[in-house]
Amino acid sequence: MQTKILIVEDDADINQILSKIMKKQGFETVQAFSGSEARLLFTMEKNWKDAFDLVLLDLMLPGVMGEELIRMIREKSDIPIIVLSAKTALESRVNALNLGADDYLVKPFEKEEVIARVNGALRRYRGMNGKSDLSHLDKNGTGNSHDAGDSDQMRVTGAMEENNPQISYKELVLYPEAREVTVCGTSISLTTHEFEILLLLLQNSGKVFSRESLYEQIWQGGYFGEDNTVNVHVSNLRKKIAALDNQEYIKTVWGIGFKMA
Image (cartoon, rainbow, N blue to C red; front, side, top):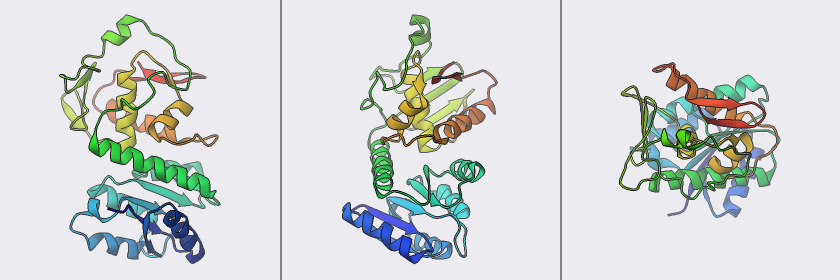
Protein backbone atom coordinates (compact mmCIF):
# COMPACT_ATOMS: atom_id res chain seq x y z
CA MET A 1 0.00 0.00 0.00
CA GLN A 2 1.31 3.43 -0.94
CA THR A 3 2.44 5.65 1.92
CA LYS A 4 -0.10 8.43 2.50
CA ILE A 5 1.04 11.80 3.81
CA LEU A 6 -1.32 14.52 5.03
CA ILE A 7 -0.07 18.05 4.31
CA VAL A 8 -1.74 20.69 6.49
CA GLU A 9 -0.68 24.14 5.25
CA ASP A 10 -2.86 27.18 4.58
CA ASP A 11 -0.41 28.78 2.14
CA ALA A 12 -1.50 27.25 -1.18
CA ASP A 13 1.93 27.67 -2.83
CA ILE A 14 3.80 25.97 0.01
CA ASN A 15 1.17 23.24 0.18
CA GLN A 16 1.60 22.53 -3.53
CA ILE A 17 5.39 22.56 -3.26
CA LEU A 18 5.32 20.05 -0.41
CA SER A 19 2.88 17.87 -2.30
CA LYS A 20 5.14 17.81 -5.37
CA ILE A 21 8.20 17.01 -3.26
CA MET A 22 6.44 14.10 -1.56
CA LYS A 23 4.93 12.74 -4.78
CA LYS A 24 8.39 12.68 -6.40
CA GLN A 25 9.44 10.44 -3.53
CA GLY A 26 6.64 8.03 -4.40
CA PHE A 27 4.23 9.06 -1.65
CA GLU A 28 0.51 9.68 -1.95
CA THR A 29 -0.48 13.08 -0.61
CA VAL A 30 -3.69 14.52 0.80
CA GLN A 31 -3.83 18.29 1.12
CA ALA A 32 -5.65 20.30 3.79
CA PHE A 33 -5.63 24.09 3.80
CA SER A 34 -6.95 24.67 7.32
CA GLY A 35 -6.87 23.00 10.69
CA SER A 36 -10.62 22.43 10.51
CA GLU A 37 -10.26 20.59 7.18
CA ALA A 38 -7.49 18.40 8.62
CA ARG A 39 -9.63 17.53 11.64
CA LEU A 40 -12.52 16.58 9.36
CA LEU A 41 -10.27 14.29 7.30
CA PHE A 42 -9.25 12.45 10.48
CA THR A 43 -12.75 12.20 11.93
CA MET A 44 -13.98 10.60 8.70
CA GLU A 45 -11.82 7.58 9.58
CA LYS A 46 -12.89 5.05 12.22
CA ASN A 47 -9.26 4.45 13.13
CA TRP A 48 -7.13 7.60 13.08
CA LYS A 49 -3.99 5.47 12.94
CA ASP A 50 -5.10 4.10 9.57
CA ALA A 51 -5.96 7.48 8.10
CA PHE A 52 -2.41 8.61 7.24
CA ASP A 53 1.16 7.41 7.64
CA LEU A 54 2.63 10.84 8.44
CA VAL A 55 1.52 14.46 8.87
CA LEU A 56 3.37 17.57 7.69
CA LEU A 57 1.85 20.33 9.79
CA ASP A 58 1.94 24.11 9.90
CA LEU A 59 1.07 25.68 13.26
CA MET A 60 -0.58 28.96 12.27
CA LEU A 61 -3.75 27.69 10.63
CA PRO A 62 -7.28 28.99 10.12
CA GLY A 63 -9.90 27.22 12.23
CA VAL A 64 -8.14 24.67 14.41
CA MET A 65 -4.56 25.69 15.24
CA GLY A 66 -1.67 23.30 14.68
CA GLU A 67 -1.00 22.80 18.38
CA GLU A 68 -4.59 21.67 18.93
CA LEU A 69 -4.32 19.26 16.00
CA ILE A 70 -1.22 17.70 17.54
CA ARG A 71 -3.15 17.18 20.78
CA MET A 72 -6.10 15.62 18.98
CA ILE A 73 -3.97 13.28 16.88
CA ARG A 74 -1.90 12.15 19.86
CA GLU A 75 -5.01 11.17 21.78
CA LYS A 76 -5.77 8.52 19.15
CA SER A 77 -2.64 7.84 17.11
CA ASP A 78 1.16 7.70 17.29
CA ILE A 79 1.79 8.40 13.59
CA PRO A 80 4.75 10.74 12.94
CA ILE A 81 4.01 14.47 13.00
CA ILE A 82 6.58 16.84 11.50
CA VAL A 83 5.95 20.53 12.10
CA LEU A 84 6.93 23.03 9.38
CA SER A 85 6.48 26.50 10.84
CA ALA A 86 7.62 30.09 10.54
CA LYS A 87 7.64 30.25 14.34
CA THR A 88 11.33 30.35 15.21
CA ALA A 89 11.11 30.93 18.97
CA LEU A 90 12.48 28.19 21.19
CA GLU A 91 9.24 28.26 23.18
CA SER A 92 7.21 27.34 20.07
CA ARG A 93 9.51 24.44 19.20
CA VAL A 94 9.55 23.12 22.75
CA ASN A 95 5.77 23.42 23.06
CA ALA A 96 5.13 21.51 19.81
CA LEU A 97 7.53 18.73 20.81
CA ASN A 98 6.03 18.53 24.30
CA LEU A 99 2.56 18.18 22.78
CA GLY A 100 3.76 15.17 20.79
CA ALA A 101 5.28 16.39 17.52
CA ASP A 102 8.13 14.17 16.35
CA ASP A 103 10.16 16.84 14.60
CA TYR A 104 10.19 20.58 13.94
CA LEU A 105 11.53 22.42 10.89
CA VAL A 106 11.63 26.19 10.59
CA LYS A 107 10.55 27.90 7.37
CA PRO A 108 12.03 28.53 4.89
CA PHE A 109 13.05 24.89 4.56
CA GLU A 110 15.32 23.03 2.18
CA LYS A 111 13.73 20.30 0.08
CA GLU A 112 16.49 17.82 0.87
CA GLU A 113 16.06 18.30 4.61
CA VAL A 114 12.30 17.78 4.48
CA ILE A 115 12.80 14.56 2.52
CA ALA A 116 15.44 13.34 4.98
CA ARG A 117 13.25 14.08 8.00
CA VAL A 118 10.20 12.40 6.43
CA ASN A 119 12.13 9.28 5.40
CA GLY A 120 13.74 9.04 8.83
CA ALA A 121 10.41 9.38 10.63
CA LEU A 122 8.77 6.74 8.44
CA ARG A 123 11.66 4.27 8.85
CA ARG A 124 11.54 4.67 12.60
CA TYR A 125 7.77 4.41 12.84
CA ARG A 126 7.56 1.31 10.65
CA GLY A 127 10.45 -0.31 12.46
CA MET A 128 8.96 0.30 15.87
CA ASN A 129 5.56 -1.02 14.83
CA GLY A 130 7.13 -4.14 13.35
CA LYS A 131 9.99 -4.90 15.72
CA SER A 132 10.59 -3.14 18.99
CA ASP A 133 14.28 -3.88 18.95
CA LEU A 134 16.95 -1.40 17.98
CA SER A 135 19.56 -3.93 16.89
CA HIS A 136 19.93 -2.12 13.56
CA LEU A 137 21.49 0.80 15.39
CA ASP A 138 25.25 1.13 15.54
CA LYS A 139 26.19 -0.06 19.00
CA ASN A 140 29.49 1.75 18.72
CA GLY A 141 27.72 5.00 17.89
CA THR A 142 29.09 7.97 16.03
CA GLY A 143 29.55 10.19 19.06
CA ASN A 144 31.94 10.06 21.98
CA SER A 145 31.70 7.09 24.30
CA HIS A 146 33.24 6.07 27.60
CA ASP A 147 33.32 2.70 29.31
CA ALA A 148 31.82 2.86 32.77
CA GLY A 149 33.03 -0.56 33.88
CA ASP A 150 31.33 -3.91 34.39
CA SER A 151 29.27 -2.66 37.33
CA ASP A 152 27.32 -0.25 35.09
CA GLN A 153 26.62 -2.99 32.57
CA MET A 154 25.42 -5.39 35.27
CA ARG A 155 22.83 -2.93 36.55
CA VAL A 156 20.78 -3.57 33.42
CA THR A 157 19.27 -7.04 33.41
CA GLY A 158 18.12 -8.90 30.37
CA ALA A 159 19.12 -6.10 27.99
CA MET A 160 20.31 -8.38 25.21
CA GLU A 161 18.80 -11.74 26.16
CA GLU A 162 16.32 -13.03 23.62
CA ASN A 163 14.40 -14.99 26.26
CA ASN A 164 13.96 -11.97 28.50
CA PRO A 165 11.13 -9.66 27.40
CA GLN A 166 12.08 -6.80 29.69
CA ILE A 167 14.91 -4.48 30.66
CA SER A 168 15.13 -3.49 34.32
CA TYR A 169 17.07 -0.51 35.65
CA LYS A 170 16.69 0.73 39.23
CA GLU A 171 12.89 1.07 39.66
CA LEU A 172 12.25 1.27 35.91
CA VAL A 173 11.17 -1.64 33.72
CA LEU A 174 10.97 -1.37 29.93
CA TYR A 175 9.11 -3.97 27.84
CA PRO A 176 10.44 -3.75 24.24
CA GLU A 177 7.81 -6.01 22.68
CA ALA A 178 4.86 -4.27 24.31
CA ARG A 179 6.53 -0.83 24.08
CA GLU A 180 5.63 -0.16 27.70
CA VAL A 181 7.57 1.41 30.54
CA THR A 182 6.82 1.30 34.25
CA VAL A 183 8.45 3.20 37.11
CA CYS A 184 7.91 1.89 40.64
CA GLY A 185 5.23 -0.36 39.16
CA THR A 186 3.28 2.49 37.54
CA SER A 187 3.04 2.77 33.77
CA ILE A 188 4.24 5.98 32.11
CA SER A 189 3.21 7.21 28.67
CA LEU A 190 6.10 7.95 26.30
CA THR A 191 6.17 9.28 22.76
CA THR A 192 7.85 7.18 20.06
CA HIS A 193 11.07 9.19 20.27
CA GLU A 194 11.16 9.17 24.07
CA PHE A 195 10.75 5.39 24.10
CA GLU A 196 13.50 4.89 21.51
CA ILE A 197 15.94 7.17 23.34
CA LEU A 198 15.33 5.34 26.61
CA LEU A 199 15.67 1.92 24.96
CA LEU A 200 18.93 2.89 23.26
CA LEU A 201 20.41 4.28 26.48
CA LEU A 202 19.35 1.20 28.45
CA GLN A 203 20.84 -1.16 25.89
CA ASN A 204 24.12 0.74 26.17
CA SER A 205 24.08 1.74 29.84
CA GLY A 206 27.82 2.32 30.17
CA LYS A 207 28.06 4.54 27.13
CA VAL A 208 27.75 8.27 26.58
CA PHE A 209 25.83 9.32 23.47
CA SER A 210 26.41 12.74 22.00
CA ARG A 211 23.33 14.74 20.98
CA GLU A 212 24.38 14.35 17.36
CA SER A 213 24.71 10.58 17.72
CA LEU A 214 21.30 10.28 19.41
CA TYR A 215 19.68 12.38 16.72
CA GLU A 216 21.22 10.41 13.85
CA GLN A 217 20.34 7.01 15.38
CA ILE A 218 16.87 7.76 16.70
CA TRP A 219 15.68 10.09 13.96
CA GLN A 220 17.68 8.12 11.37
CA GLY A 221 18.61 11.23 9.46
CA GLY A 222 21.42 13.71 9.21
CA TYR A 223 22.06 16.09 12.08
CA PHE A 224 21.38 19.60 10.76
CA GLY A 225 23.41 21.90 12.95
CA GLU A 226 22.26 23.29 16.29
CA ASP A 227 19.00 21.60 17.26
CA ASN A 228 17.25 21.48 20.64
CA THR A 229 15.15 18.44 19.71
CA VAL A 230 17.22 15.88 21.60
CA ASN A 231 17.42 18.06 24.72
CA VAL A 232 13.64 18.49 24.78
CA HIS A 233 12.95 14.77 24.49
CA VAL A 234 15.49 13.87 27.19
CA SER A 235 14.01 16.57 29.43
CA ASN A 236 10.52 15.15 28.91
CA LEU A 237 11.78 11.66 29.76
CA ARG A 238 13.35 12.88 32.98
CA LYS A 239 10.18 14.70 34.05
CA LYS A 240 7.96 11.67 33.45
CA ILE A 241 10.30 9.37 35.39
CA ALA A 242 10.85 11.93 38.18
CA ALA A 243 7.11 12.18 38.75
CA LEU A 244 7.29 8.63 40.15
CA ASP A 245 10.87 8.26 41.38
CA ASN A 246 13.33 10.96 42.44
CA GLN A 247 16.41 8.85 41.66
CA GLU A 248 18.55 10.05 38.75
CA TYR A 249 18.14 7.89 35.65
CA ILE A 250 19.60 9.88 32.76
CA LYS A 251 22.83 11.74 33.40
CA THR A 252 24.16 14.70 31.41
CA VAL A 253 27.87 14.38 30.71
CA TRP A 254 28.75 18.01 30.09
CA GLY A 255 30.36 18.72 26.76
CA ILE A 256 29.56 15.24 25.49
CA GLY A 257 25.95 14.09 25.82
CA PHE A 258 23.82 11.67 27.83
CA LYS A 259 24.05 8.26 29.49
CA MET A 260 22.19 6.21 32.09
CA ALA A 261 23.05 7.49 35.56
